[in-house]
Length: 165
Length: 290
Image (cartoon, rainbow over all chains, first blue to last red; front, top):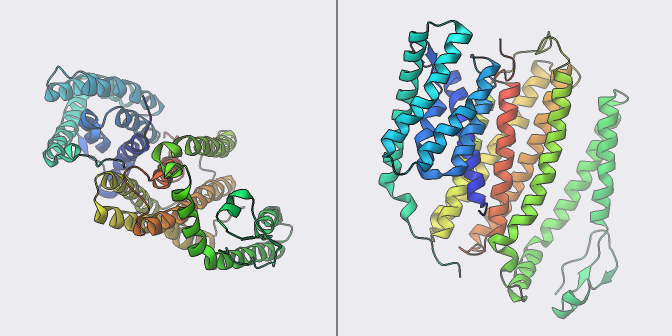
């Protein structure tokens, strides 16, 4: 696979969208909490990997790692990008499954880990942890899914490239 | 055709067969050597200031260096239109055609350059972490709270500039001339905004209003070192984008030949991702985990 400039650009832009989106939103409009879980706004970008491909997957993982350096869930949250990576790869590659189901599977993969962190780090009861993580992730991914549909409507990726000559 | 006479009045001659073939005379100039050697003055100035030997002496040396640099740039600006025109014409007339500007030609050199940059920043971050983790409490007691409003605006400007320069490349490949021209102007402006916010607003505020100087504590030293290195890369990026803008308006880039644009965009993305780490470490409490 040949690495293009645009791939590197997408990688960096997605890393920035996750990291700065998460940290910047918190500092600008305050924490967004669903029950006991502080939602990471960067999760909104997750469904977009279906369109932007591998660079966006790597970018979101790196962005999540950067954002989690300041996570209230502690240093163990630095492992979270590894879990997310699996979910993001599923959104991108399991193309036989409808996209909306892939997005739900992403939520199903990531929220148990987040629930575990809420329970182990903050002592939130298991059921409350599970519900908080599930709802938080679900809302973020649903917003991202809407954004993806809007991007697809623009047909931006279908505009033909001019000949190189 | 003459490239102009060097300010230092160097010896007149030809720069070899290639130039002779084009009938272009080149006037040798001592400027590159002078500027190169003058970086020794910068090193000496930094040592004098950081070691507290003579701040005035250091500032004088820096002033001398920047005066030389300004004089050099002033003389070079006189020649730019001629040199630029001749260089572009030689590209086009050579057997390489537009090969030197082809996208693929930018890949390896830019990649190698970014490897050296990654090693450079890697060393700087390693030093930071090596010392930081020797502190029992971080940030060190007495450190001021670093307000993150300006860095947040800077982060936004970087994100917007990265998206915009990719939009420029997208538009160039699809013949959207207006998008290309507007995009490079916006990108250059956003890059300049970042530099102005850092060196024109934030640093003076920290240095002169809050007394947070290079020698305040280790946080201050590492802060100015890392953000200074990064900021100098941003300034270089602004310069590169200015050239990109000028060339875009002259119509030098085509869908198949815009290596300089792609190289500059890649460099800018690299500068962007380094900033994310600086942003989290210095302003957002990265790796503190209270």
